[in-house]
Length: 45
Image 1 (tube, one colour):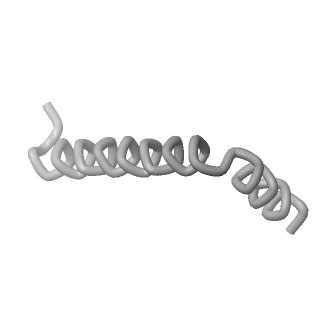
Image 2: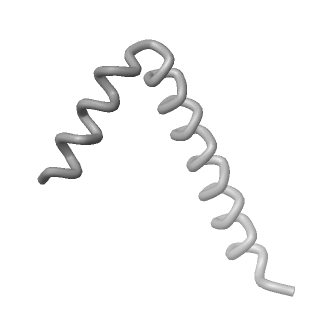
C-alpha cells in the first residue's frame, strides 16, 4: 500500500489532467481550425 501523500498527488494529477483536457476540448469546439493551426505552428518550432 503506497503512502497517502503519493495517492493524493496521483489523484490531483489525474484531476488536473482531466480539467485541462476538458478545457482543450471546449477550445477545439469553439475554434477547430485555429487550434489545429496553433498545434502545427508549435510542431514546426
